[in-house]
Image (tube, rainbow, N blue to C red; front, side):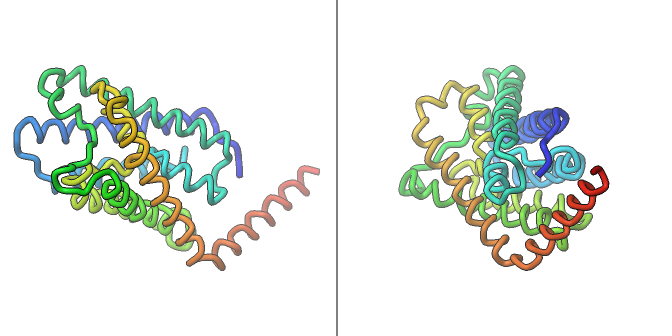
Length: 250
């Protein structure tokens, strides 16, 4: 695993900023206009994440989500110190995005917490149901990420849209019930900007942080197991290349 550069850290901050800004903006806009169309909201997720993966994956891997970073760290695709910096950049990017939405839509967005995520307890049994839904949604997202981007034989020009489509599809189904954070940073920024984070801190930790991380880890290890032979072969090729480079340097 190579050490990430400053450019990778900046890419994670910028990518998360763009992702959360457009998500929070469309959620706030549609709520204020009372035309909350979850198909539109889902498509915004598809397009924004797809273009970000296509444009920034070569710099940072295009995580933009602590659940993605934790899963890839567990799969030994990123070093621990780099993963920690990635998560800090993601939280910072999401926070900056949420405060910009707040600055643009101060009065209009206050009632909907500037796109913040909250469990719809009128429809769900409580935080446990929210935890399950956030976990399943993130499972689908990480299944797409690891299956189409980490497994080399599956990579193609469609990979960014497979990943964006996985997120958008999950959002269309889950957003009416939990807001479909599926990303601790995406949940963190708007709640902080709305001064609602600490009032809902238990829900944030259990539903919107632990739920996505557990779902992501399950998906990551499942795909890793399904493609075990291919992963081992790729690791052997990488190790051989590193030996050749080190031998040439010596």
